[in-house]
Length: 154
Image (cartoon, rainbow, N blue to C red; front, side, top):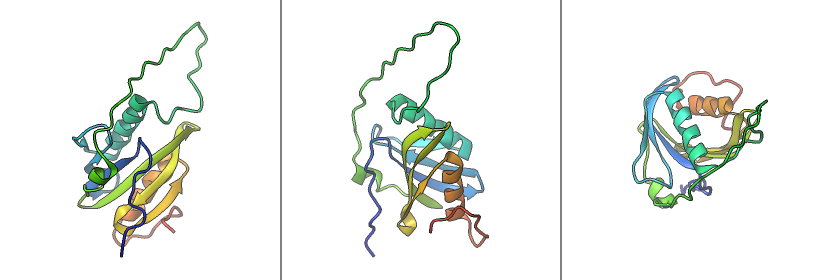
């Protein structure tokens, strides 16, 4: 069967390759357009922190609200245009031993992320409304034979 969901389609999209999975204790790497080297992570928390750092460096997606300051404060954004060094096709060549996901964060609202996630191994794509929902989707995909919670790939 030909994969229909395997494309990135957004500049801040990443291919997340999970090699070891034991709940949110997962190890692996993710690939993005602006480096030929993977970004390694040792825990789920580290994955989220490194993704947030990437989005901040890319200045996309921008948060829906800014920090509130009660004293005069000027924030000057200096974001260099990053050069794309890896194509979608090259990124999609990488796979994790436990699972592979394409994460596309399209918005940051309500102190969280919204976007789409594709479970490459099963060729399924769903929208998520928060980081927590994205994490539960990954968790449900990688659980072997355990009962799923309300968040599902259907």
